[in-house]
Length: 147
Image (cartoon, rainbow, N blue to C red; front, side, top):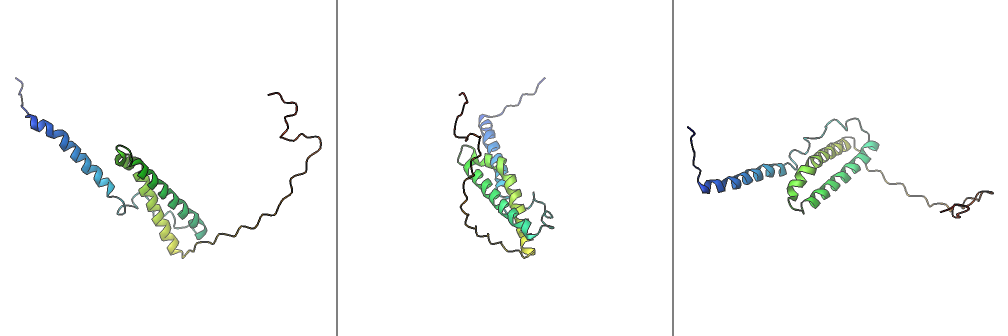
């Protein structure tokens, strides 16, 4: 009553190879998302009302985070299965950060902002050590404490 289908051995051996090929092609498509969709996970209106004082630290923070994520992705790729781990763990956040950085840079250019010059650190005036208070033990002495 049951219909028995015979599958040849070479066909059975080809199934895992085809499955791996399809998986590779699918993950390879994720790797091509670098610049074309970099704003897919970013809010284009986030920096519309920011002024230059707000945009400057935001741009620095976004650049630092993008560099950190890029380093984490490079580190992940050195291990076994690294490219897959890098894609799954860090790629979406990296794309979002790059998109936000792009929108922050566009707002920076629209507002015609200029990087502020860091204020020169004034030489620190030598300060006198605090005067000891009478009747109080110094913190370096053990006093009557039991250890």
